[in-house]
Length: 487
Image (cartoon, rainbow, N blue to C red; front, side):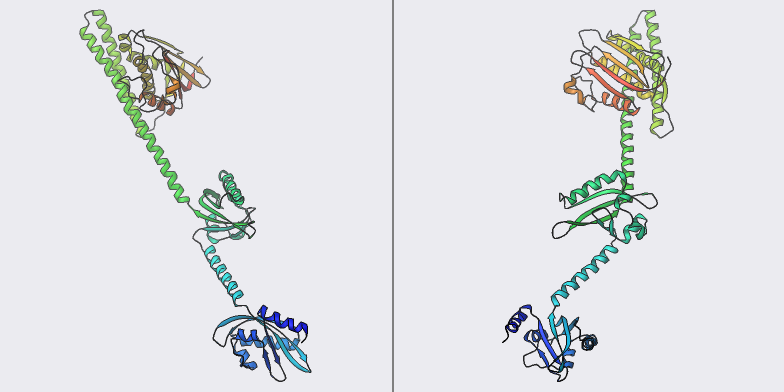
């Protein structure tokens, strides 16, 4: 036997390739063993042409291919579905060509079972269809994005979410429609994804709607890579969370309002407690001193002081009424007050307390400085700081307090200095203005005064600081925005 023919007969079964031939003159048909295995027939089966055609589900297409091959005598091919002798469905690839041998016309070719390949292709097509349906009709925005930021594919929901027609949308990149404040974070996470540092990322970000409005979205991104792990494209899921963000913003604003109201209520309660207690205490001391005083001139002086304190008490009540108006939402503006005049009012309130301990109060404030403040807050600040000077004085030397103020550009700098026991700022500096913090074990200390002073100063746009060391007194520096300074 010819060597090439022997080799051919050996290789054909390895390729599982069926060989067939049809003699158009005699009608004889030849199938090799592989062909019989494909058709699932026995060795004694000798089919006619019609029997061969009967295996196929689309006989007309097969006959058309045969006629075309016979007419052209050129190689032809086709893929067909057949039902085997055992009733099994298979996909086959048929190759054929017409020719002549020994003066007779023949048609010959090959048949190959491609069921596995077709099943894979059908499965892929089905999955593609499923993906297309899931992608296009997803209830959230979906997009395939190239690594350069250009859109490969976007779904209907995303276009509607951002107000674009698909053809216009595809002309933009994701950078074009991303809010600039969110772009750097998005790009940073995208590069981390490309570099393999993270398998995916999610973030809340803002997009520009076609009409210019802001759309808040929850973006989730994964990266598709090829077999060599090279990046192909991003899969982005984009969910509109605008309404949720609006609710969160409203909630945060409500919480800020509630916290501010709670803070103001705490301030208000302290002002009532501290300011009225100071006035009441002074009036009580004055009435006691008047009852015990026998000197007519001194008695008249104490009665005069009692009158001044009564007037100050009425003014404080008016200030508190103004504060109630502010907290109840009534229109109210900060008052323009002369700083020296307000300091003198507080000095009058504390006259008896200072006199009882033989304290010295020096006031060095320019009479032309005016500040814009909440009057009740200013009174509370001055009372707190000055009563602290009294409370934390040294017992072995007379108390000396100095109040000074000067104007610097658009601010007034108020300093209250005493020669008291001082504060170790290296230990307590970061806690000094905290709530409920006390530092000297004084039984009258509640740890609320300086916290509220700081809160009140800052609510009016000012700042407060302190200089102090143990045994060397303290200086509190309060800076107010200045309303007017007449030189």
